[in-house]
Image 1 (cartoon, rainbow, N blue to C red):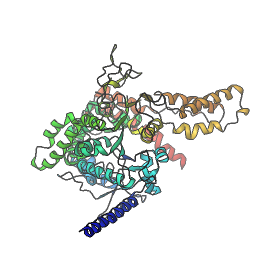
Image 2: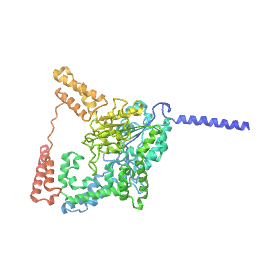
Image 3: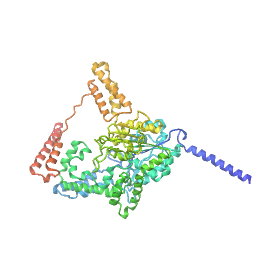
Image 4: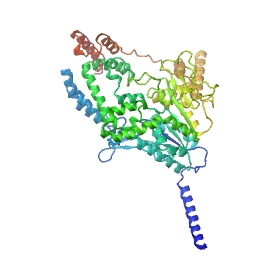
Length: 614
């Protein structure tokens, strides 16, 4: 009996040694999991993952330049669009009625977004390939590293912690939200196994905030795997832009808004006014009918089945949206999944508190005081960063509207901060950070646009410090990173203007110009090397340095071309005198005058330059 027991014990010991050896071999980090820095997983935002279109053979579709075709946000085949729309457009112009224009626009929408469409189970039906990185950045190719660092430039973190401690969780922005959350859970387990660490850091960015909501709700056991979370402009309660889209509550479906302000927020003002003038060729009722048909197709045929878009809609919208879109039995599975996420959204604060109670550190970096793109009708009801309203990114902070301040005599509410020594009201009196869920670990950047967040080097350096060290535990830990900071993108200063100024031989300049240049250079260098600024400071510093370089003869003073305000004046005149009426509804004398103006512009800007060249 003793011999049998001994044999069994020996076998167990052999297998134990083999298992330990196999586990050690599986670990890919130099530290073997024995360093103080946990690996970090970036969960990127919408459009920050490459998704490629494939043909019927599974090969990449290529554009005219031989480059792979991205599926984000759609594939616009200009040849098809012209072919499908040209005759309906011409007939509509001739008849001044909807001669197939609405149908053509709907077909173009369906064809362009077909690659991102999902079925009634929320599964993508397009022929696509998501470019994923199921390994650390250390194992990525140079091409893959370039893609990752271009989206989220955490290269300094990688240099400090090691590229074997940085991972990038790529996913399709227009796909099944539940599947993405489940994939992230598996990804976390893979990272733990590959690195030998028992905990990870997570960096949810923008849309990644919605994925994080789902992770904590559907897989609460993952909380034991988390060391830190560093949210960056997270869509924790969606974006009112997406909510308004699903509601079809859009500004440009109001003809007054369409012809008087909408386009200027999306493009150059001169171009916008030109389009406003040209669009009057089509009667406003026909134009709006076509736009409504396009919106109906986009929402009803495309967006409704994409559950990642539902996850980007604010929780307050969900009950009404479910009644609008999900009552048909065919939508039962979409409703099941979106309802699951609705509760994840509602429980977001509670789940974050539970995560903290389990020992994880949670930080948040948000932008504010940039108006939302005026696409949805609620665009001016809340402070925002251009894409997401501040209430969503900040976990419920109270703030004034963009361009306004908190009321006179407003006193800090201290909703989530009981320390009387803490001042959580922003210097510009726009934000009361004490009302957000995490008043002591949320950092705010004034006038920072959501889409340019990754170009703010202070934000990236703050995120790096939070992930790579334990130096910063709250907004009071370091004067280098105060709770309230400013927008900036110093690449122009760093890469162009400062090197140009350093190369100047100041001995060849007059004392006055040399002194001005040296002072401007010193101020610029202090700025780019610093980690604290205020909104607009970069513009002031660049203007000084460029002005000094012009005086030094390094730069030539640029003469600003006076933009032609013909279309601007014409569009405003038309609106003031004829509202939104199309040309067919205007007096013939007005139409003749406008036509003569067009002919004059045609001769001045097109025909005459061509004749000169010939």
